[in-house]
Amino acid sequence: MDDIDLSLIGDLYRRYREPLARVRNSQRDLLRRTRGRMTAQLDDLEAEITYMLLRETRPETVMELGTFHGWSTTWILSALRDNGTGRLHSFDIVDDVVTNVPSDLSLGRWEFHKGDIRQNLAQVPTDIGYLFVDAAHNGRFAKWYLAELFPRVAPGTPVSVHDVFHGRRALPLTEGAVVLSWLRRTGTDFFTPSRKRAPAPHIALLELREKLGLGEPVHTGEDNPMIFFRMPGKRAEKTSPGTTTTGN
Image (tube, rainbow, N blue to C red):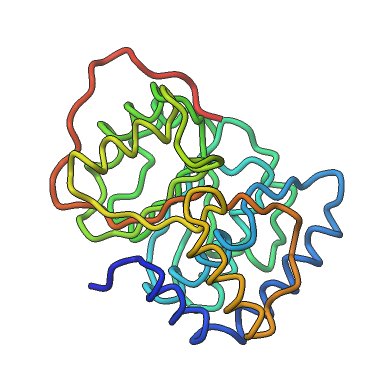
């Protein structure tokens, strides 16, 4: 099982250059067509890495926690379409995503679950092959999903968590700080393309994309604060009950 690191990501960019170029063009067009309705939450590097990891791992079931307007949803569904297999289960307390996802991406491969995930754990699929987390970014909610959601995911499963490294360090009491502490406790390495946390890998990926003809931005975000890792074998530590807030 390959570690998610700069070497792997570089290999994936070379391997999936052509389909990634097509998806980038499609996403750029989608952003134009949904102007005023779509806010692109994922920056280009983290969106592309998500797409390529999904292509490489070919999961049958993907869970997305937090959709907002659907930018990440459409990237994920594009990967499942290009794989020719897989189904996405998306969870959020708002349903703005529903009107933004094109039917040719959603039909037959997407199920949206509206509501607070803490009251809808029974709807969480049992065979998650990729977990994407971009919901409430406070530490209390992170403690909840580390205790209640992560233990449902098999060891080795790719996981991504957004909005961790907008700066060199995660701010205290935030989701990022809680997840990073959990990663340290479980001895789990992570990769981030964050411009501020990991400037050398960030620049290396920008230079590689330029060489591959993928340098033109899809949208203007540059932080790329997401972290990527594989679910460790040990069960996450339980946190005390009653310490969560509603995700959004």
